[in-house]
Length: 191
Image (cartoon, rainbow, N blue to C red):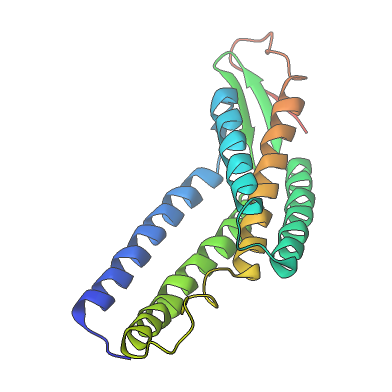
């Protein structure tokens, strides 16, 4: 494989962008957060639509479907477990929740770690396959067939989606039971 500055630069640029997104996500996972139902519903809808698009993909096979199901089941279980460790409070300033950051951090790190792996390891292999296909017309019509789908990536995405969909919906349902505090600025904690 021939490494040049454009391949290395592109890979580093993608890795830096993913690390920046990961850093911002981790900052939002820890600490008290204002309950914003419209944002949560929007995120649930976006994650669900992407799940449906992945399931409607022509590159599906039994392995990717099994990985999607397994990832979704584990993600939903983790989302419900994270809800048990979430603290809710209502004050004069509004409704807030404090998630268990470590559970969310692990789920996000698994998915983004897999994406970084795919860009660092698989991208150069795709580039090499394209060069070999250009040099040898006897190769299959699609030299990228082995790289177009990955059951592990699909499973980790569905784990992430299952976690956030179940967690956000559960937070919205549980937060409906919180009542505003009658005292001036003393928050009420609901576990």
